[in-house]
Amino acid sequence: MTKIGVQSMMLKDSFAEVGAYETLRKVSAIGYHAVEISQIPMTEDTVIELDRARNELGMDIAALSVALEVPEGVPGDSLRSDFDKIVQDAKRLDARLVRIGMLPLTALRSVDAVVDFAKRANAYAEQLHDQGIDLYYHNHHVEFVKTDGAYLLDVIADNSPAMGLELDVHWVQRAGLDPVRTIDKYAGRTAMIHLKDYRIGQLPTEAFGYLQKGDIAAFMEQFKNVVQFAEVGEGNLDFASIIGHARAAGARYLLVEQDELYGRTVWDALQTSYDNLIALGAAELF
Image (cartoon, rainbow, N blue to C red; front, side):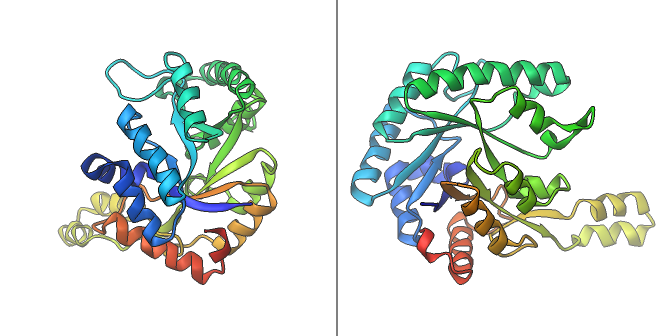
């Protein structure tokens, strides 16, 4: 059954301030009962609190986030250095999905580097599968650059058959593709989908100041950059179709995420997304 949850990237400040359990208690009080862990240091204390949230709140730990390799000095678990810990944490939390949040930035230098990333990720995906855990890759917009007529995401997918996909509908839209058709394209291979709306924002006041000064170039920079992240249902994406096609495609988790909040609190944003999803008829998915 498909379940709607939350991507914890947007909750990282709360995790740091009050801990995993108290944060997820507030998430649960809104009505979400699944969470994907991302940008949260997986210390022993955090794992203990996540396990407590599972047992006491019924919180489903949908997935854990990992990297292929973590640059020195950057927090996070990597498949290269922390494979056994990742497996141990996943099994302890009954999280049978793990995901790579994005390409290593250095891999963007060439198609060969992307192919190398995909093949190395595939090797880890096979090892994780032997442990009863599946590995997924999360897209942004850069994976839809075309190379020799093929999207970079397809280069990744073709070179990592053991790794699935986690589609982010906002980034698909920002790449100029239709989220629904993209979900259909990767049906059967996509276990998780990020629900994140795509909004055209108002031009900021300073843009008109540039216009008044005759600085057309500065005005046009503002004009071209009005795309915003938004709460589900507050932008332009057709979430009724997205959810229907996601379920038909076999997605197990639909995870609400918003990269920027534009002055709102994370709790207000999550409540708005929840209310709009309920209004769309998705109550059974919570």
